[in-house]
Length: 295
Image 1: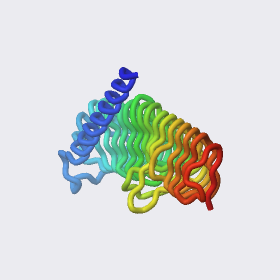
Image 2: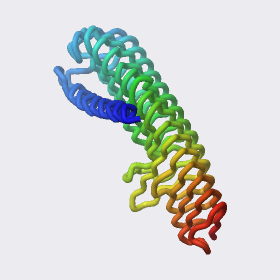
Image 3: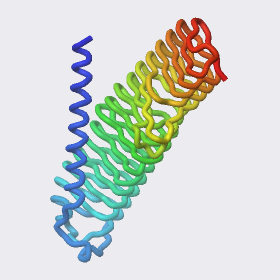
Image 4: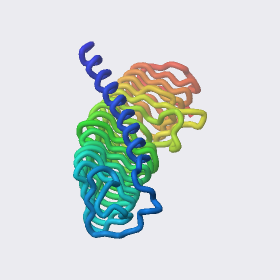
């Protein structure tokens, strides 16, 4: 068991360190330019870049066709395909961005694929990377990182899959994570360990079906609430539940519905508790075996 805990901590530490370094690389690459914007005026169907915006044609602002980076490429707008070996950055892309290394966009409609992929605003379509997928403006469609982490900071709709860790601040759809899932999901959330909310989220509610082995809820001064079915081995945290909470140990701030477990605790209960030990601060009897109730 100790070895498993050590491996788990190491995996999360490596993932967090990688995500931080990746974001730093994205910022540095996006802010670097060799040719001023005033000199970029041309439209071309084909552009070939050696490194960033050092390319032929040299003054291209918009590519309507193929933007090819022998090493890396950077251009304002692409309608079509952007392909590079090391890195690619684009302000606006409608089509496909394919990079073996860093794939960076400000606004993307279509498909973004990279060893690591990042969008400063929203992604409409498919964002897939081997190690890290990030969308500051959220995503509408699919976000996948089979070997690493998926991150969506704003409102998102669709499917998020992460091999290690997935986070979504306001996802309506499905979130599946190999080890750790977090954020606020309305739909289906599946992960061995789940953290609901983050204490400072823009979206302070989740709902649907939550499946995990260990579930921890965080709320700030504004209450975090969950409506639906919460099924976990251990449900812990200051969360308001409307629906059903099932686990070996269940703990919630306010419950409107049913808690089923070996041990159940609620600061405020409007409904039933079923288990070996049932504790409700506002119940007629504070602690009861088998069943307890509150109004």
